[in-house]
Amino acid sequence: MKTRDKILLSSLELFNERGERNITTNHIAAHLAISPGNLYYHFRNKSDIIYEIFQEYEKLVDYYLDIPEDRLLTLDDLTFYLESVFDGLWSYRFFHRDLEYLLDSDTRLRQDYREFTNRCLAAINRIFGKLAEAGIIEPQPEDLRSAMSLNVWLVITNWMAFLKTAHASDEPASLTLTELKQGIYQVLTLELPYLTPDYREQVLALREKYRPTLPENPEQSGEASRAETGVSVGID
Amino acid sequence: MKTRDKILLSSLELFNERGERNITTNHIAAHLAISPGNLYYHFRNKSDIIYEIFQEYEKLVDYYLDIPEDRLLTLDDLTFYLESVFDGLWSYRFFHRDLEYLLDSDTRLRQDYREFTNRCLAAINRIFGKLAEAGIIEPQPEDLRSAMSLNVWLVITNWMAFLKTAHASDEPASLTLTELKQGIYQVLTLELPYLTPDYREQVLALREKYRPTLPENPEQSGEASRAETGVSVGID
DNA sequence: GTATTATTAGAGTATATACTCTAGGCAGTC
DNA sequence: GACTGCCTAGAGTATATACTCTAATAATAC
Image (cartoon, rainbow over all chains, first blue to last red):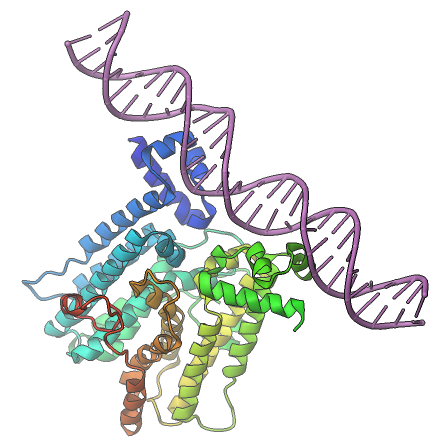
């Protein structure tokens, strides 16, 4: 593999594991056993590395969220979209962690991310539209659909941060892809009231697959706090 | 005002305006026209300052989210809760921005924040319960109520980040409290399908008050992108 | 007034960070 | 073998950052 690609790969790996803020260009170089000079031969600065990684992420999600125009959506399609989005979120999970800072430090990135968000919102919106066409959810006025799409986006993009903060973990990277995908349970919760009777049972079954498994946090009995909060998503 | 309090106040102000990551202890001291030595006389380190600010935040929200046990909830109560939560979010808005890093750097904070989250989730859950008692929303199984509460929390805590990233603003702190409170529109959207017929109209009217006002972004016509995305929350 | 304590200034420091600069190796080409 | 273009090493740098240390000043107690 080319050094340039190795830099991108290692950067992503280190950013994901320890956070962009905690990883310097010197760390990246050291991790690859190359010199800082070498790294800076391939990239003008840290921002450029991040920007290229973002572009990969963008491409990935855009690819997954390509909604077919010529046929109805199925529940399998919906599952695929949800799984893919959370896979993407996982692979580039460092990104949302320091999002605001990153956007503040790089106007290209800010602009691109804004457009990316709009494309994602549009895709979610279109999915809702096509789920209605397919008779999976009841059709809703455009107004409501937009607001719902935005809520879906907010839940998706915040789910990881929630998991990370909810973890008691002094142990660091204790987050798993399985846990992350429990976000799908939350997203499907948003859609429950709008399901058509024909599909209600099927979607409930799908949702059930992602239900948080309760005792994820072995070092605490959890009974007390769960009883106290009345909230059992399996992360207290 | 005591120097110690001035430090807390200025820190909060600077953190909110420019982000914790961009504000050093030297900045804070300079802003107050005191010496770094003086600052470190009052606080052992930066983490301690942040921790105390968080405790203020915690106290504020706990105070607002004290749910009465002895009477039914009204729509005014709901409005108050929503307004208060977003006010709190606004006053301590730096906090969620660098949340993960902050929790990673301070285990006290991590622990406290975890408990804080649980209390908030419990409060939201209790509010749902009491809204059902009051006949404002239909009662729901505990299962669903928990998942809904979590979604409300995710929407609330992510709304600000969304606004910040959605802004085209090269101009920096262009976010207003009014915009922030449009998050209430999003939260009420979550509750729409569960409203009882008796209250549906009233809640819709309440929600309408927070509807995003469309052309917030004067330098772009917005027509194109809104038409393209089909999403009009007024931030594109 | 004097002793004691609380507060402050300000210079200083160790470490980190993003990045630069120069010199040279290596592969291919003629 | 020499020339060329790509790649790499590694020492070095300017700046920043969190924090320390000493000495001096203000406030309070007796």
